[in-house]
Image (cartoon, rainbow, N blue to C red; front, side, top):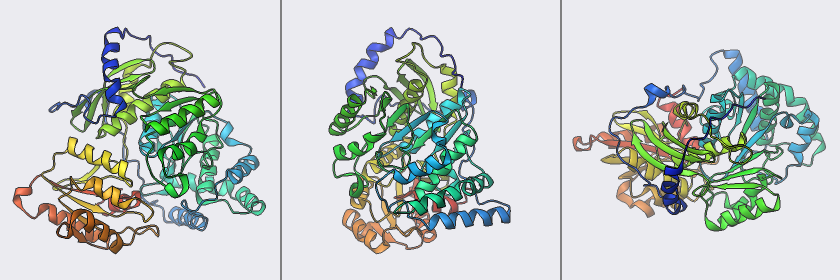
Length: 507
C-alpha cells in the first residue's frame, strides 16, 4: 500500500490563537459555535456533487432477488442483534478457520454511542479520495442488508453478497458444531465482511462496532486507529448505567500502541478512555484540544467548515450534511485519517486540502437529517436515543426554520422513549405515533401513552400503520395556508426511517 505524500504544512501561527480561544467552547460542545447565515453560497460546483444514493433497491433480476432472500432468511434464523452472549470466542474461531482474513489489511475501528456511521462514511470518503481502496462495515442498515458491507464507497452488489455468504457458509457450520452457541446474525455478517475485504483486496477497512467494544464481534481486528464518537446512555441493559461504565466496554477496541481519536465526551467517560490508553501505551488526540471545529457557517445544502486537524488547519470545507454534530463528526473523521497516515506523530505536514475538500463534498449519510420530499418538506432522521434526538432537534432548528413541524415517531421497545420525546417536544407542534414492522418495535399504544405524557393529548395522534402515519402527518402539515413553511420529521428508529424511505419512493 502506498501512502499519499501530505502537502507541506502552511503557517498556522495566526490561527493558533483563534483555535485556543475556542477550546473552552469546544469542551462544552457548543452547537452554535461561529454559526452564521451564508445566504446562497454553494460550493458543490467547485467541489463536485455528493455521491449517488447509497441505499440499494431489491435486485431487478428475480433469480438474484430470490437467492438474496434465501440468504436473508438463513441469517434471520440466527440470534438477532439484540440477543447476545458477550464473547469473541465464536468469531475468533471463525476467523481462525477462514485463515485470519482480518489481518490482511490495516483497520480503523469506530465505537461510541452516536455518529458512528456518519463518521465511518466520512473516513471512507477521505481515504478513497487519497486513492486507497476501502472496505466499510457499518450497522444497522437503512433499507437493504447489502448496505452493511461496502467496497470503494458503495454497497457490494447483491450477487457478491450472496457469494460472500456461500463462501463462508461451510466454515460457519463447522464453527457452529464446535461452539456452545451458534454464530449470531451479526457474527456471520462480520465474518462475511472481513472475508470480502480480504478477497477484494482492500487497502484499509473502516469498521463500526455493533454494540460496545470489548466483546463486540468486530473486535478481532487490531485497529491502528481507534475512533470514539460521543458516548451517552444507550443499551444500558448490556453496557452499563453510566457513561463511565459504557466507556469501559467501548474502550476495549483500543489496542496496544494504537492512536485514539477521542470526540468530546462526558468527563467520567473520557477518564476511562484515557486510563485505558495509558495501560496499552496508546496515543490520544482529543477533540477541543489536539483537533476540533474552528468555525461553522450555514450554507445551502449543508455547512461550510474550518477544521483544525492534527497537522494544521483546513479551510473552506463544504459538508453537505446538516447539524453541528455532523461538523464534529467531520473533525473526528479528518483526524482519524491524518492519524492513519502518521500525521501529527510520525511526520509533519498536513493532508492536501483540495483533496480533503473534494472528499467531504461527496459525503452522504442516508437517514441522517435527510430530505426526501418537498411541499411539504419531509426529513428523515434515525435518532433513537435522547442524545441523538437533541442533536437532531438542534440541527433542524438551525438549518430549516420550519414554521410548523409534525413528527412521525416509531421506536424500538428497549429505548429511553420518554427521553427521546422530551428532546423533540420543543420543536414538534404535533406528533403522529406509529409502529414499524420489526419485532422489536414498541407497541403503538404504549408509545402513545408516553407521548401523551410528554406532549399532552391534544398534540398526539395515533396511526398504527406507518403509511397512514405519513399521510396523516403530511395532511397536518398542509392543513392551513398560514403553515406554508411546515414540515414533517420521521424519526425514532433506523427501521422506521428505512421503511418510510421506501414508502416515500426513495430507492
